[in-house]
Image (tube, rainbow, N blue to C red; front, top):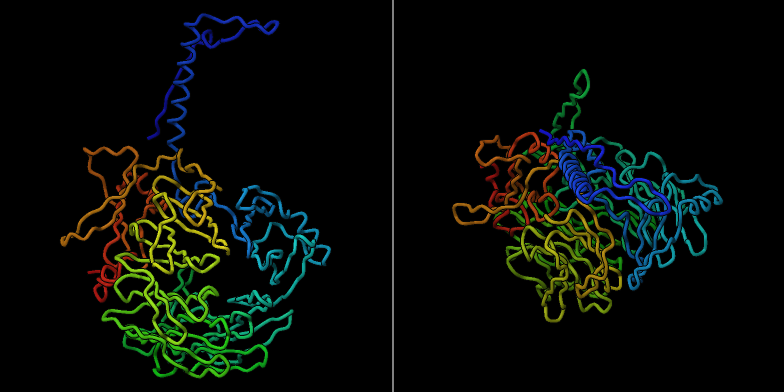
Length: 584
């Protein structure tokens, strides 16, 4: 129910000034003045109360009305080899030196369009999403083409173009070759010339598809360019042995059935191989991975030299992982670098991390000690040392400082509900937290390792961008948001912790209706997922809730969410508790 307020003010008493002559004003009595001011203040307070009663609609929730979400910096990124960053503002590309914070317009949409038209291309309706290639030049994709722009030289070049039929595009940023699929086959376009890598006509065979393993084990795409663009590795998936599973589309007046290949438990699964195509010779080989007929190929990683490729081989039972090294030219198996076994399951999700700061070595993330931590290996498979350890999960590597003495990464060390940026001394293995405010932090490290841009959110902050140095000092705020829901009746929300029977803390979120009365009973909307990779409760804006949760509270429900055993960022035991016990 909306709060309303009616206020009548005597017209005779709201006259403050009269007979303005020669810069002087006659004031009515101080009694009338104070009475008027109090009346105006009361009216303002009533208008404030009314403004805070706006209601969310289902359309707001389903279509994610941008007006009620915090603003974002558009495409912030560092220019390679510098401490200068860019972002897009309206129709301009802004450039900022981290040291002084002075922003200047590097390129406008009008200027970019004049370069496009002068080179014989159509103008753009909006500023494109760019990626810096060098200190001076960036590239962007538009209309099945890739363009290289050098603002300092007022130049633009179309480096490559490809067919409208292309799917699963994967650009090589070195030479701008584009890999893509058409139907079930894989192609490369270079300087506008198309080359077919495969010619499989039989239904059930696909090349370069991102559907391998249904995007489990960190698989997000089906093609992998080598560092300098000489080789393209890709998945070849054979689903001919998999029983078709019908999917019914009921969106039309008459339902339609389409089949997909889905390997049911105990029935044959698809077979996957990894092809390696040499763009210089045109030779195609396949890595010698077929020791078992049914297995998952993941963690595909190129050696910086391009001579070797590394593949994680996971058995169908998902409890035994072998990370193997192969010859890129011949596909021949060279050696197994390391193996992992687990009674429940092994879940490789990240490729090997290479850097010129650790030549001849790589870093890998693993649950092997019960928590997600980083390990340093050499490329012959020797474990040099475990880099991080403790009863918490580490998350992502951001990069090194210029001398390679410090590794920057994100971790849940502070709390499973928070993510922070840390600096690891590679000699002492001591970690230092760099982000001071509580909440969830996402960072972009400059290539020099001197600064990082931090986007963070918490139960107190809807979204804020800051610039910090590599010692954790906040240099300046880049973007600060006001709560876009401040005028809405969102109800009361917060975090709480419940204890399981064995005293295990379980993190929860509770949202109460705006007019909550503790003396009344309310229906409860209990929202839970509870599977791997499904954390719903966090120290973030709205405590991680979605707008639909607020909508239900607005309708008079108490909305309750719990991250039970099985959710992530709590270690292997907590997550694996639901192994073969899901839903019990």
